[in-house]
Amino acid sequence: MQKIILKQSDKKILAQYSENQKPNEACAILFGKEDKVLDIFFTDNIEESPINFTISNEQLIEAYKIAEDQNVEIVGIFHSHPNSDAFPSNTDKKFMQSNPVAWIIYSGINKNFKAYILESDSIEIPIEEK
Image (cartoon, rainbow, N blue to C red):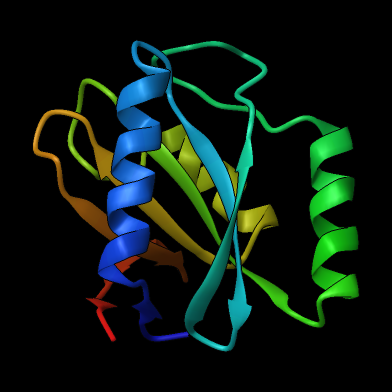
């Protein structure tokens, strides 16, 4: 995956969701096909933390079941950084290894989105709008 396609309307929804979850990190799973996001599955940050997020096993299982039922893939993991830039933390990089999809991060301070994939290190990939 060299890019991720995320509609402007989905960005607005994710930004609003992130703002509503403050002071904690927001998180969601992104469904789609290949590099295009088609749907958002909002999840709870069970850590209730402004610096980390964890999606429950129950919600992960539910997401995989929905993806299978709707014949889509999990193409991305979304989360917010309420008080920092949209750049993967060391914790993010660790979890990117076990979740090799696009990671989209929303900065609560800059109000921008950035996407990353992990190769030998995290590399930024473009977000396109269609």
